[in-house]
Structure formats: structure tokens, C-alpha cells
Image 1 (tube, rainbow, N blue to C red):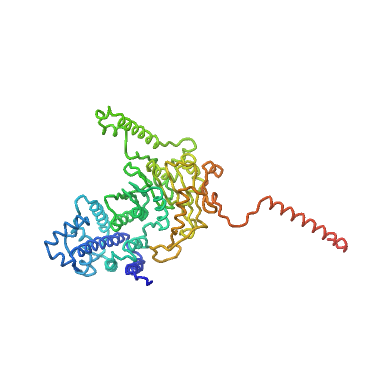
Image 2 (image 1 turned 180 degrees about the horizontal axis):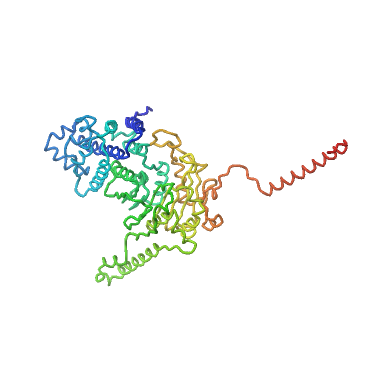
Length: 552
């Protein structure tokens, strides 16, 4: 089988080499990311129009005004946007201008000045938001004052324009994501093996989700991975870093997700986990491994959003009591709903008292806020630092989440081979409505298989590995059927956690030791035999010395 040569991969390698240049203003990163958006939207529309007309040159398409009028309506209906002039397409602009013009303000405004969106298209809102951020960033420095920087940016934009948005061997999306995680942009990256396993677990728990939320979305890969692999309604995320938020909004365009379902916020989830008092079917996240002095630097408070934002008052105000007062079934249904609302309100009331008083100052208080943001039947799957499992200061929090509320459903330790640190992260599954009073512990330190990631872009091989399908299927089977498998998994009753001070380290509960076990009683007996033998040997030596008249 002949391996197809990838033009996009070759261009990416060149961009990676160029991005190693130091001392670039951080604002330039926004311009580079915008270049990907311009290329994608421009070529996507151009390819659509050329296919519809059978033409090979976009300039000839625009030369027929009657045909352009018909195409405009078709593009707005099917694509959601239309570029009003042929010279506003990226490739045409580059062909008609000298390369230095690609660093000028006209280059970044031309698409904005010539694009039209269909009525009610949420894409327009996010597109305008992108330009608000871009204008703010671009306005804070001037490329034209630095000829060397001007040329560098121009060449970089020219390189982006040579990418093929339709290539399959290494897609435009892959190039965008790989470049964003480079040392130039350095968007916090969620390793693919973590994104894959979180997605697989969520898919196995729920057939679909009306709402998915990631409060620390970083590169937003988990959200988009879920959207590609299962039916998802609204996609909600928070990202505190401006460049991360900017990157994710552009990613939504490039992944062609319906932006009417996207709700991204440039906000700090530590300060407030709640999203407009909403609750969610699914919460997923790769939680950052470092939160330096959260309790001192960032204020946290206990939050409890109202599930589905319902109340007795709101319910009754929307019910015509006169019409249903004689309908027994309708009245019973209404009573059931009222009782359900009271139940939900009670559930969201959490008060820390006694030994749990200190939880209000916990560095991981946001975990409780995340659980509070779940619907009653919701599932939360997160990647978390292993410190959470054994850190002494978090003992009460672990007790609260396990023994007191039975929120933790499973804990999965990941192979060191996949991680980028000495102590890799763990995957923890949380549920609000658990039926079983136990936790499934899974240890992947010994039994697992890997395959190379299709998104591999070079570097150390271990950073490009993901779990194979057989391992993922085994994990899902153990979780769903709560299986105990020797040296792989164990189902532990909550009562058993007391004896370990609620230490949740997986190796405490899943024995993967492969050496020979020695009983302490046998070891003690062996020691006694050795001491007896040594005593007899010493007696023999003393007798020999006595017979030889040799004394010391």
C-alpha cells in the first residue's frame, strides 16, 4: 500500500519551524488564528460555488450578475453566509496584492466588510465577536513599525493560504489544532487519549445529551469530540484565557458545528461555575493540574443552579387552573410536578457544618459546584490530578463526595506510558443518582493496549499514543457491569473506604503485583530457623577451637 503524501502536513512542518522564532508579540497569535478562519470560510464558499456552477475560476462566477444573484440566495440558504465580491476571497486577495499587504489592516478587514450572513444565523454573532477581539488586539500594536515582523507575518499568512481545506490524509482541522498547541500559540492541550476515553464513557452512559458543559475547556477538544460522536444539543464552555476562547470560537467554525448550539464564555469558572443558572446532562473536562493558591487568589463560593430553571410560581403562572380543575389526571400530574420541584430545591440546598465546615475553603470546592450544575440524572467525567486521591487536606472532601453523598461512580488510573508527567492524571466518573453503594476502581498500569494517534505530528512516540479499541471496550464493560477482574478492576463498597481514611489511590484497591507473595508467618519461621542454625554453627566452631586449644 502506497502511503499518500500529505501537502498539509508538509506545510504544517514549515509553520512549526517558523513559529520557533522568538520575541513575537503575543497579539500576533490572534492574527495567525484568524488567518485559518479566513482561509476556511473563503475556500469553503468558493468550492461550493464552483461545484454548483461547474466553473474553475471564481472571478468568472462573479462576472455574471444574474447568476451571482441566484447563487447568493443559495449560499445563504445552504451555507449560511455569502461573500459579496470575488476579490474578498483569500486567494484572490493574495494574488492581487504584494505579500507585504498581508500584514496590513486592510487584509484583516476585507472579509468582515464583504460578508453577509443569513437571517438569525448565530454564526454572525460569533463572527462579529471574533472581529471585536481582533480589533482590540491588533489596535494595541503596529506591525508597520517593524519591517522584519511585517515580513514574517505576511509570509506566515501566505503559508496558511496554501493549505487544502479538503485534504483527507491530514485534515485542515488537524493542522489548525496542531499549530494551536505549538510553542507559538500554546493553547492548553487535552491529550487525545484523555479526550477519547472521556467521550467513550459518556457515550456508554447516555444515548444523547441535550446539554454538555466544560468549565475548563482549554482547547475545547472534549466538547467537539463529543459533538462528533453522539447526538448533543447545546454545547457550553468557559475559558478564562482570551487566546483560548478566541481559538475555540474559530474552531467551532472550522468544525462546522451549528453555532446556534454553541455557548462559549470568556470567563473564569473558579470564580463562578454557574452558567446563567442552568444545569446540564453532561459535564466533561480536563481539569488543570495546577491551581496555585486558589482559595487565596480566586474567590470561590458554593453555587447551586436551579435545575431547568423551574419554580412552583413559574409553573402555576403558566397553568390555566380553571380548565384543568375537573381533570383528575391533569391535577395528579400537576401535583407530581410540584412535588418534584420541591424535591429538586431541597437537593440543591447544601450546608456545611460540623466537621465539613472547612470544605467552604477547599481548593477543590469547584468540584462540588460542578456536581451541583448536573441534572438529577446527569453524568460528569473529568480528568484530574492524582493528588486529589490521597492529599491529606482533601480527606474530608473525598469523604463528602463518597461516603456522605455517593457521587463518585468510578476511578480509572491511566498508564504512565501515555502521560507527559511522572504521575499521570486519573479519570473520575461522577453521578448524582447512583443506584449502587460502591465505586469501580480500574488500574490500567499493566493490562492495556495502544495504537498511534491519527493526529500524531512528530515528537516522542509516547505522546502520540492512545488506548486501543479493545482496552476502551474492556473499560466500558467493567463500568457498565461493575465487574471485578484480577489485576485490572475492583468494585469496592463505600464502607470499605473508612479503613483507608478515604484514600482513593487506585493501587490500594486493585492489586497488580506480579511477584511471589511471602506470608509474614512464614518469614518469621524462616528467621527463627536461620537463627537456630547460626547458633548451632557457632557451637560447632567453639568446640573445634576448644579441641585445638585455640581461644580468643
